[in-house]
Image 1 (cartoon, rainbow, N blue to C red):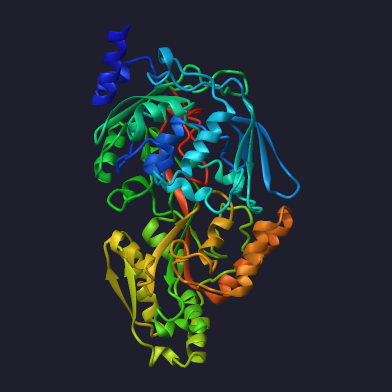
Image 2 (spheres, rainbow, N blue to C red):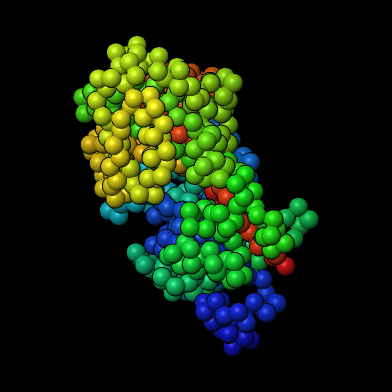
Length: 533
C-alpha cells in the first residue's frame, strides 16, 4: 500500500499523464507566484492564502454569498455593547496527524488553541503581517479568555463591527502550540492545522501536493464527510502563457484570471467563452471585491493643480469606462458607477450614491469653471503607473487629450511605485484596493485621516468624514451603519480624491470534469466541496 501511495504522489509531483488514470480524484491548479509560507500568520497574498485555506480553519467562515457561517465555532454571541464576543466551539475537531504530537496522532482542538493562536499574532518577538487584525483593537488586559475547553471569549477596547469578518481571514486560523514548539520558524514548511487537506509534499518552486484529511469534521447537507477530492496538486509555472497552454492540454483543471497574451483565445469580444471551447471548459464570472483607481495625493505634497476639486471632477467625467472595459478587458469588470466600495459589496448602491459617467460636456464645463477653458493654461500632469496597466493609462489619457488635458505616463516598477505611494511621493498614481474582508469599512479606512499610508495613500483628510467613519464602527445597528457608509461614499464622490476606474470581476476557467467550484467576490479558492469526475 505504501508503494502504491508513493507512486501516486510521484505522478502528482511530476505531472505525469499516467497519474490521471488513477481512480483517485486530483484537482490541479497553478500558482504563477511562488508560495512563500504555509503559516497562516503570514498569509498576506493570494498565492499563500489559497493553500493555507485548504490546510487550516478559523472560528467562522464565509459562504459564497459572503455571509458568515460557523466553522470551528458552532455558534457565537456578541454582548449588547459590542465589546465581548463569546464562541462555543465544536468538540469533534482534530489536528492533522503529525510527529509534533505524541505517537504522531493529532489531538482534539480546544479553546486553549484559539487563545494560543491569537496571542501568537501579538507576539512582538516574532513580528507577523497578520498582527494588525488585533493590535489597537483587543482589550489590553484580558483580550482572550478560555472559559472552558469549548468556550472562548474575545474582548475589544471599543466596538468594531467588522470583527467577525476579520476572524474569517487566514490570519485568525487556529494552530497547535505543539507544532510551533516542534518546528519553530520552520512551521512555514510543516503546517499542522484542522483543514480539509493536509500537506504531503512541497518541492518549492516546482509543485505541492495536499491529501484529503480523513478526519475532517464538516459534512455536506446529506451527511457525507468532506472533502470529496482525494488530493490537490499545485504547480508553480511562472509564465502565465505556459500555464494557459497546460490548461488547454488538460494538465490543469483550473485557470484563474486573464492575461493579454491569451485572452482572445478564451473569450469573445462580448466577454463570453468562445463556443469552440464549451465542450471542454466552462467560465465563471462574478464580482470581485477590488476597486481600480487613480489616486491623487492631497495636500502640499500633491500636484498643485489637482488640489482643485473641479479639476479632479473633470478627470472623472472625462473618459468612457464602459468602452475601456470592452476594449481592454473584453467586458470583464464593471464601470465604477458609484463610490469607492465595489459592486459585490453589501451596501453598494449606485441609485443611492450615483458616481461618475462619461460626460465630456460636463468635464469641459468644470475645466472652464476652474479657469482652464479647453485645457488652456492647465499644467501637464504626470501619472505614475506600472507596466501591467500601461494600456489602461494610455486609453484614459488619450480621451483626456480631447478635453485639452495633457498627461504624461511614467512607468515604474511595482515595488518602486508602492514605496513612493507609501512615502507620499506619488502625486498621481494608478492603484487598486482589494478587500481584506467583506465589509465596506475596509474601503473607507483608506480615507480616514488618522491612518497613514497604507491604507490612506491619498492623504485625504476631512473632519466630517472621520466623524462618520468613527460612528460607523461604534454602531451595532446594521441599517444605521449602511446610512453612514452611503454618506461617506457621497463625500468621496464629491471630493474625488481618486479617479474611479472600475470594479473588478473574476474570470475562472474550469474543466468540465469539475463541479461545485466556489464562486465568491473575495476570490477564495475553497476546495472542500469541489467534486471531480
